[in-house]
Image 1 (cartoon, rainbow, N blue to C red):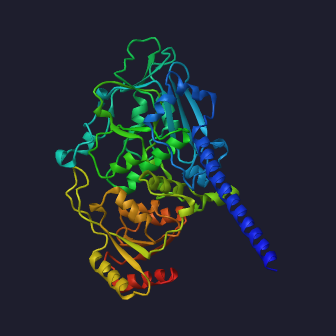
Image 2 (tube, helix red, strand yellow; image 1 turned 180 degrees about the vertical axis):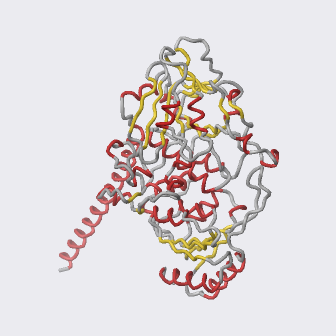
Image 3 (cartoon, helix red, strand yellow; image 1 turned 90 degrees about the vertical axis):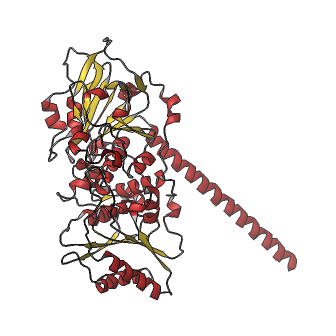
Length: 508
């Protein structure tokens, strides 16, 4: 009997070891294959015309200067049949709805625009593009705010002289790359009073392939985004710019994270740290002392042309969903794109975004209270922010008292003084939060980086009743609650009642 038991025990141990080894090999192989698949999506070139990008570029040898794309759990392919994307579907709004391709120039240099009927906007790209900074009228940009106090916005916005940008090609067709009819059709003004990207494209002069005029003091071989910004010191508007730059990079199928040049003269802000984290390098156009030639230039649409901004004035019926579910069951009314972008921001700061870490390790619930503080935002700012919650400190103190009196459930109330935190610290606070509370204000835009199952509680003054953050929560699939005030004063008891019900749903 003992010998029989001994044999059975050995067989069980052997089978357990064999099963463990099989599982280990499976998950290792699955992870490796997932990485390879996403890398294939990034590195595959979808048409023979992409060869224009590679001419004389020695791209493989230059990729050492570029950051790799991180592996993102919510990533879905960007370049699969954009022509088949349904107009005004969620993918058309948030993903690759840029299905109409217009080739403008094919010889010498090359230039084309990818037009989205849904967003009424184009992502344009070209090769052998020359930028002449001295022909762009604007301030230098990149200064410390304190150095340029009082400088007008007009000085910071670019005014492009004819020939501010040039491109190699045949001048037999035209001296200028495009005409007003082309701009009206594919780069319309919309509601933008001064469409700077339209102005940039209007300035592009075609230089004959054999001309010695096309002199370059510096060649940038790797893909480079050209970005112009407006409300660059406001987090909401800056996130629309980040998203537009991210989408442009994906739609043009860049195998690595590109360089980026600000074609504007704005001063530095703390938000610049995220630009540098997201992309391979960031420079200002006026930093260059001479002409700069770009082997592959991508012109990023204005942040005003993203779904994040357009959703404030037009109905976008989209619900957040997981990429896994959408891959198995595509749905025009659902999207995982904002979740993908939020993961991109977290990964850019080296925070883990693995699918296996989707659940927060439980060491208590972090409740992040986003505060509004005085700070110097830009050269025309007096350093004072407008209060959206007149008794913000009283509300915070009431929350602190509730937390102190509920010791049976570990809750950490985080004082979100973002003006005194680096961008990386802000993103960490957001990703670690189970609940995010705040008055309506740009700081709440950080919820784009929140992890699944995060709960949002927005306190809304009757003077600022706008849907920004309700929409972002909806598009990410986050649970959202609002307390609508009569004026800007919140009764602490009302906030505590709503907060306690949220915590009860979390088991507290």
